[in-house]
Amino acid sequence: MILDSPQTIRAYTDAGWWGTETLDDLFRRNAAANPARLALVDPPNRAELTDGEPKRLTYAEAAAAADALAAELVRRGIGPGDVVMVQLPNVVELPLAYLAAARIGAIVSPLPVQYRQHELRHTMGLTEPKLVITATNVTGFDHAAMMREVAPEVPVITIGPELDAILSTPAAGLPESGTTANDILTICWTSGTEAEPKGVPRSHNHWIAIGWGTTDGARLTDGDVLLNPFPMVNMSGIGGMFVPWLQVAGTLVMHHPMALPVFLGQIGRERASYTVAPPILLTMLLANEQLLAAGDFSSMRVIGSGSAPLSAAMVVGWKERFGIDVTNFFGSNEGTGLVGDPATVPDPEERARYFPRFGAPGTDGEAWGNRAARGTETKLVDPLTGAEVTERDVAAELAFRGPTRFPGYWRRPEMTARAIDADGYYHTGDLFEIAGERGDRLRFIGRARDLIIRGGMKVAPEEVEALISRHPAVAEVAVVGVEDRRMEGEQRICVACVLKPDASLSIGELRRWLGEQQIAAYKMPKELLVLDALPRNPLGKVTKRDLRMRFEGRGAAPSIGESEEATPA
Image (cartoon, rainbow, N blue to C red; front, side, top):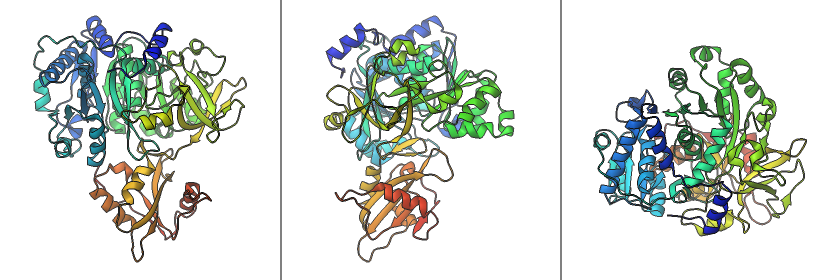
């Protein structure tokens, strides 16, 4: 299934930004050249996460397993363009599912393991999957039973004994799929200002173009060991780990979740060359001599970080103490890719604050030394007027187009029309300003839209508002994200309500009711404020800035209830 226009494909191919190789081609080439090289490694604590013993597969073994799974999918009627939904933790079966789908031209729609029935009904309704690969146990939760409850007509394959038997069965001859590099490989999910998750389709060429951001930004070389602690279901895990692994014929070491002692142990034991970690963790490690002493960082050359502003002291600290470069990433499922690395932003202190201004007028993508910049065009626009902003130090919305940009939201043309303008620029909703002496830097200011970042996941306030509005006590509701007082770079979900006459509601009651709606735990609110009326501007729109100030300024007020009640993961 090809979604990009013939004109786009021709232009990008002629320019050399896109090619003809699929991810399956990359993997087959690696397996043929390095059959005995270690390819995939499970988390050592897999038994605590899900079913099955930890696996360590060479390229030859991984190729045989991927072929076996591909053959089973074909046997079950899965062909080019069919959607296979996958909901798995970070274990080796997850990359094997991508490889098997790439082999036969199927489309993988990966879901975070936190998704529950509410999210499944929406995503399965949009994609109409022909088959599901999941688990009966992910830290005690039965995802397979949930899938069968939501869509009993869809066949389910579970990891453990069932999938192990499939992977160990030699594959008969597989039919040629006819898949091209422009065919869609994945439909990932992202939350935005809409009320539900949005599907983001990406082709092999999209993924390869974005993968160069990490491969070049981290200066990965043949055979490097990549340790992946991010869920391999979206841009960070796929574009930042899975694709670069294929681009350098490396070893992909899986980690799930962020279990720090396990993670640190894997760095030394697996001799990891590259990994990623959130800024708060890297800062915390530098301040904890006991943890640092327990780790062996001698193999590590580069650590990627992002999703929140970096500390200059942290970036400098890792370089001075361990000789490890910290690369600053800014990306999105839609294909935004800014990479501050030692080549594009050499000074460590500057790298913490600025990104290279890829695609700035008059710049050459090749000159940045990162292939993710090739063909990328960026501009800043006034979020109110849409006029382009060219002055320095003026906050404006980032827009971009080029080989990394997705073709549009899955089966949501109206959302695509709002996000991508007539000139092909995707409007990110993120505020930056032009910086640097030559105007060749971008500084991140904040999110123009009201996305809430919780547990590394994006939460659309509108989705939570839509759910809470159904509560029998609620007349009006607004949801905002407020900086978490205990975790830098994280936000707590705060709810402001106007109640119906004679009704009452506590945060505990609200959380219990939301739990009954079977939503993901990271969407659970932490605080509740009951008001006589929501603050509004003259046009009647709720002024969420005022609400945030109330939560920030009255955090200890009796009218704000806080709860740490346990909720299902």
